[in-house]
Each structure stands twice: as structure tokens, then as C-alpha cells.
Image 1 (cartoon, rainbow, N blue to C red):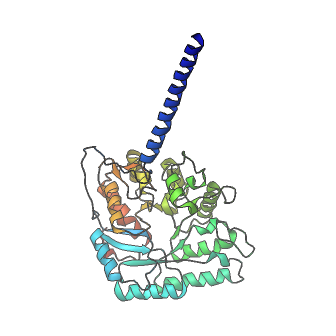
Image 2 (image 1 turned 120 degrees about the vertical axis):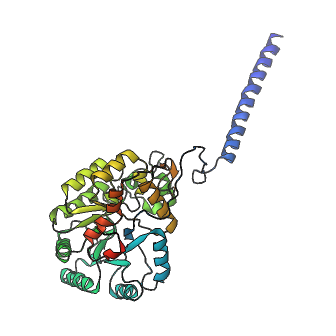
Image 3 (image 1 turned 30 degrees about the vertical axis):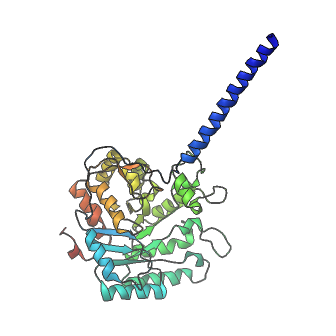
Length: 375
């Protein structure tokens, strides 16, 4: 009898454990079946706050950072109509390239919209070992200015992937490039330079990396620290160029990847009076720290330009809303860049005017000033 009771107790315990385990497994399966991907999860906020949709900027603006890769053949009338709807007075196309492509681009602008677009030329730095590299590119820059080009754009490949004839990475501050930077200063060509990438691209692709979703969707953006020069070293090379060429104006693209550390960016601008910056593709950094960002934009109102980078009309609306309103807790337009919410900076009119057009007109004096309110 005692033996049977013991077996009964064991049996009950076994059934209980088995049942508990089965329930656990079933619940896990149900959870997994019902679990949506973070890319799909888009909850509608129940927060009741003021909403201001801004589809037209308060003041006409210059977009200093845009890419129109098909401009040699593009119907500019359609693009101008879209620009007018946004209140964009002038667009800088950084993708002018060179040669026949550049020639056709300039012809299209002259014939169809001569006052609305500016072109930056691009150089092939991988020809750096050519015997005539310096003389050829200095002549290219001089000729480009004569034909109506207004600046030089340097892509991120310099310092990351560009290689010389020996297969060695070309550093941003390679001394063989010094004559190029000096010539831009002599020509009055601002140099819009994009160096490196967000520092998070060099970090482990784990749950602690706030760029995890972007690296998942765009795995090619990951920078393996074992193979790629470090973020800090590339940035240091860029800053060395700024220091060595004080007579050249540099536009440090994307807030120099310091939009997440505005104190560092402030020190950077203090150290290099020949440098300005722009907000293309980094608005999300400003929109998540509205108090600190607002104060930064006021303190450095003469040093920041408006830029967007990729072109899509509806995405400008978020820029206007962040810069002009005091709205709270609203979405950025691309989750992989910002899974957090935006807050408006409500910048003063005097700051908006400098950000939207006054700073650009100072740096690019060839822009038709009749497109903008009188300074």
C-alpha cells in the first residue's frame, strides 16, 4: 500500500511537470506565431497633443545637399514645380560628376532653369598616382568654375574605399591632395565633404546597437573594424585637412556625424572657423533632443545649412515640422534611421532665415538673391 501511494505521488508529479512543460512549450509556440517583426510594429499613439502638418517652409530655402543623378536628361520643369510646392528656392545637385555628364547637366540647367540649380563637380581620387593628377584636376576645377559649377563634392569613398595604384587606401588627408584643397580656396569653391559613416556602423550588430535595424536592412553598411579603418581615425584625417587649409571653406556633411554629440560638434566648429555644417540625413538626431538641439542651433546659427540628401517631396515635411513647430512625439519618415520619436525645435524666425537661405547665400554668392527675401 505504501509502495503504491509513493508511485501514485510520483505519477502525479510527473504528470504535473509534463503538463507544465507542455503548457510552456505551447505558450512559446503561440507567442512566436503571434510575434510580429520590429519592422512591422507601428503602434498608433494614443497621445493627444497639437499636430501641425507643414508642407511648405516658412521661408524660401536652399537645399545644399541633394542628389539628382539623372539631371543631364531630367525634365526640370516637373522638378521645379515640386520645389515651388515646398518653397525651395534653390537646389544644389552634388552629383555633377565631370566630363560629358557634367557638360550635359549644365546645358540642361542653362536651357530650362538657369536660376534654380547649382552643380558641384566630383573628382576621381583613385587616379592619384597619375603623373599629371594634380595639374589635370586643377585645370578641371578652373574650367568647371568658368562653365558655372559652384563647388566640389567629396564622397565618403575617400578615406573608406578609394585606393591608389598600389591598392593602398587613400587617406582623407593624403598630402598628394593638398593642392586640390588649396585650389578650391583660391577659386572660392566650397568643399562639401562626407567622411566616414555613423560610428555605430563599426559597432557589434547586437541588441545594444541603435543602428541594428539599419544594419539588418542594409548589411552592406556594416564596417568591420578588423578590415576597415576606424571611425575616429577617418574623422581625424578629415579634421586635419580642415586645419591645414584655413583659406578653404569646407561644408562638413551630415553634421560631421556629431549630431548625437552636439557639445563635440560645438567644439569642432569653434576649432575650425573655415568649417560649416549641414543637417542632411541627420534630422533625426536633432528631433530627439529638442532642448539641446534648439540651443545649439541658436548658438551656431551662422554655421549650419539646410540639406536633405535623398530627394522625396513628402520627407521634407518632417524637416519643416521639426525645425518650425513645437509639436511633440511624432514619427520620423524612415524607421531604420530613427525608431524613436521626433520633437519640434520651434526655432526663432531669425535662426530659420539663416538656416534656410542666408548662410547658403553667404557661402554661394552666385545664387540669384532675387529668389529670396532681401537680406
